Image (cartoon, rainbow, N blue to C red; front, side):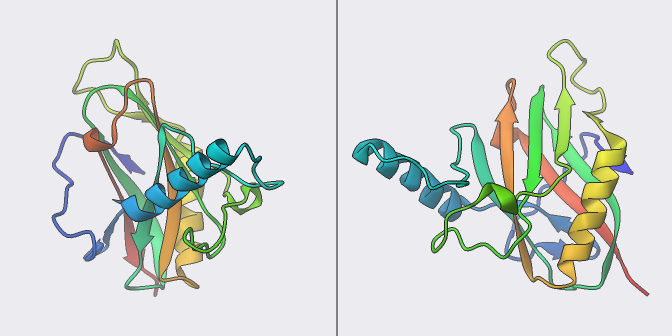
Length: 176
């Protein structure tokens, strides 16, 4: 189930990512910076990326989701996008440390999550998404939470979407 209204979903403290059963995906500026430095370094030196390496594109950023509880079941997404545009969320499947290892394409999860509002849509219209993909993606995150304390994501902002205009959280319920 997706919730995409204009309710203020922002939290003041990303380090405290879990509030009850709600977990916010937080921008991870340090990792985004490291990945941008990698691209700049390759461009300066004229080198090519490693075979299978996934470089960060200019419209992408790294986000993270911390799990304080690991036995979770996916409930629903809470996404707010002020304005219009398209946001694609791609999960990273393996333990990845961007300051130590390069991101490889084989580490990216499918399906990806995509939320959008077209430029001609009213500002208060609900966000569109592919419900089945978002359900499967949320369940996959809950499964990975069982073996991790943190998970990373690539967010792509397109067609006018901006990081400052997005709030994205996942609601989980404790597994019995």
